[in-house]
Image 1 (cartoon, rainbow, N blue to C red):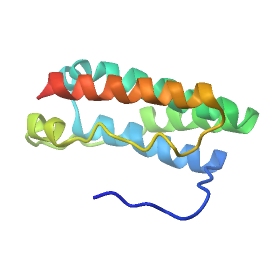
Image 2 (spheres, rainbow, N blue to C red; image 1 turned 135 degrees about the horizontal axis):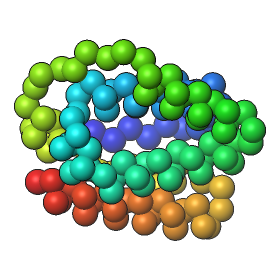
Image 3 (cartoon, rainbow, N blue to C red; image 1 turned 90 degrees about the vertical axis):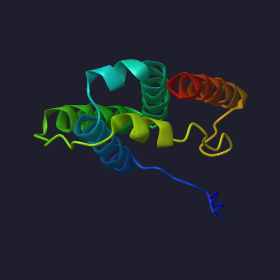
Image 4 (tube, rainbow, N blue to C red; image 1 turned 90 degrees about the horizontal axis):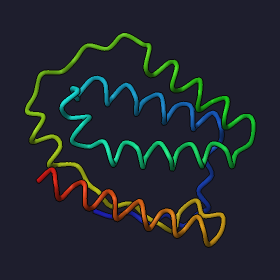
Amino acid sequence: SIVYHDYNLKVTPQKIYSLEKGRYIILRKYLGWKDYLKIAPSLIMTEILTWGFSILQGPAGIRYKFLAMKDGLNIEVVKKEMDRKQLLESLDWDFPVTQLNYNFIDIIIKKFAKKVYKINYKLIK
Protein backbone atom coordinates (compact mmCIF):
# COMPACT_ATOMS: atom_id res chain seq x y z
CA SER A 1 0.00 0.00 0.00
CA ILE A 2 1.06 3.59 -0.46
CA VAL A 3 0.34 6.27 2.11
CA TYR A 4 0.42 9.96 1.23
CA HIS A 5 0.84 12.44 4.05
CA ASP A 6 -0.43 16.00 3.87
CA TYR A 7 2.45 17.65 5.68
CA ASN A 8 6.02 18.73 5.14
CA LEU A 9 8.31 15.88 6.17
CA LYS A 10 11.18 17.04 8.37
CA VAL A 11 13.98 14.80 9.53
CA THR A 12 16.11 16.25 12.31
CA PRO A 13 19.71 15.18 12.90
CA GLN A 14 18.51 13.23 15.94
CA LYS A 15 16.00 11.39 13.74
CA ILE A 16 18.81 10.62 11.27
CA TYR A 17 20.61 8.95 14.17
CA SER A 18 17.61 6.79 15.12
CA LEU A 19 16.78 5.78 11.55
CA GLU A 20 20.35 5.00 10.53
CA LYS A 21 21.28 3.17 13.72
CA GLY A 22 18.18 1.02 13.31
CA ARG A 23 18.98 0.34 9.66
CA TYR A 24 22.47 -0.88 10.48
CA ILE A 25 21.19 -3.10 13.29
CA ILE A 26 18.48 -4.64 11.10
CA LEU A 27 20.96 -5.32 8.28
CA ARG A 28 23.34 -7.03 10.70
CA LYS A 29 20.58 -8.99 12.44
CA TYR A 30 18.87 -10.42 9.35
CA LEU A 31 21.51 -10.60 6.61
CA GLY A 32 24.83 -12.35 6.07
CA TRP A 33 27.84 -11.52 3.90
CA LYS A 34 26.43 -13.28 0.83
CA ASP A 35 23.27 -11.20 1.18
CA TYR A 36 25.31 -7.99 1.47
CA LEU A 37 27.03 -8.87 -1.80
CA LYS A 38 23.69 -9.48 -3.53
CA ILE A 39 22.31 -6.12 -2.46
CA ALA A 40 25.61 -4.19 -2.58
CA PRO A 41 24.44 -1.73 -5.27
CA SER A 42 21.37 -0.85 -3.17
CA LEU A 43 23.42 -0.59 0.03
CA ILE A 44 25.95 1.72 -1.64
CA MET A 45 23.18 3.88 -3.12
CA THR A 46 21.48 4.10 0.27
CA GLU A 47 24.73 5.22 1.88
CA ILE A 48 25.16 7.89 -0.80
CA LEU A 49 21.62 9.15 -0.24
CA THR A 50 21.80 9.13 3.56
CA TRP A 51 25.22 10.78 3.62
CA GLY A 52 24.03 13.43 1.19
CA PHE A 53 20.99 14.15 3.31
CA SER A 54 23.10 14.22 6.49
CA ILE A 55 25.56 16.66 4.92
CA LEU A 56 22.69 18.94 3.90
CA GLN A 57 21.67 19.04 7.58
CA GLY A 58 25.03 20.60 8.45
CA PRO A 59 27.52 19.66 11.17
CA ALA A 60 24.83 18.13 13.41
CA GLY A 61 23.59 15.89 10.59
CA ILE A 62 27.12 14.69 9.86
CA ARG A 63 27.83 14.10 13.56
CA TYR A 64 24.64 12.08 14.07
CA LYS A 65 25.24 10.01 10.91
CA PHE A 66 28.73 9.09 12.16
CA LEU A 67 27.33 8.31 15.60
CA ALA A 68 24.61 6.10 14.08
CA MET A 69 27.24 4.19 12.11
CA LYS A 70 29.41 3.72 15.17
CA ASP A 71 26.57 2.61 17.42
CA GLY A 72 24.68 0.57 14.81
CA LEU A 73 27.77 -1.31 13.68
CA ASN A 74 29.18 -1.92 17.15
CA ILE A 75 26.15 -2.89 19.20
CA GLU A 76 25.87 -6.62 19.83
CA VAL A 77 23.17 -8.29 17.76
CA VAL A 78 21.87 -11.84 17.68
CA LYS A 79 21.52 -13.12 14.12
CA LYS A 80 18.03 -14.33 13.21
CA GLU A 81 17.84 -17.62 11.39
CA MET A 82 15.36 -17.38 8.56
CA ASP A 83 14.84 -17.82 4.84
CA ARG A 84 17.04 -14.96 3.67
CA LYS A 85 16.23 -15.53 0.01
CA GLN A 86 12.55 -15.03 0.75
CA LEU A 87 13.38 -11.94 2.82
CA LEU A 88 15.40 -10.38 0.00
CA GLU A 89 12.70 -11.15 -2.54
CA SER A 90 10.07 -9.51 -0.32
CA LEU A 91 11.91 -6.18 -0.21
CA ASP A 92 10.49 -3.20 -2.07
CA TRP A 93 12.68 -1.19 -4.40
CA ASP A 94 10.38 1.82 -4.74
CA PHE A 95 10.39 5.05 -2.72
CA PRO A 96 8.81 8.50 -3.19
CA VAL A 97 11.13 10.79 -5.14
CA THR A 98 9.10 13.84 -4.14
CA GLN A 99 9.95 13.80 -0.42
CA LEU A 100 12.84 15.69 1.13
CA ASN A 101 13.80 17.52 -2.06
CA TYR A 102 16.15 20.46 -2.12
CA ASN A 103 16.66 21.15 -5.81
CA PHE A 104 16.54 19.70 -9.32
CA ILE A 105 19.83 17.82 -8.88
CA ASP A 106 18.45 16.13 -5.77
CA ILE A 107 15.47 14.84 -7.75
CA ILE A 108 17.75 13.53 -10.53
CA ILE A 109 19.91 11.69 -7.99
CA LYS A 110 16.83 10.10 -6.43
CA LYS A 111 15.51 9.02 -9.83
CA PHE A 112 18.89 7.42 -10.54
CA ALA A 113 18.78 5.71 -7.13
CA LYS A 114 15.35 4.26 -7.94
CA LYS A 115 16.77 2.75 -11.12
CA VAL A 116 19.66 1.21 -9.19
CA TYR A 117 17.24 -0.24 -6.63
CA LYS A 118 14.93 -1.60 -9.34
CA ILE A 119 17.74 -3.26 -11.30
CA ASN A 120 19.28 -4.71 -8.12
CA TYR A 121 15.87 -6.04 -7.07
CA LYS A 122 15.36 -7.72 -10.47
CA LEU A 123 18.80 -9.36 -10.20
CA ILE A 124 17.90 -10.73 -6.77
CA LYS A 125 14.65 -12.24 -8.06
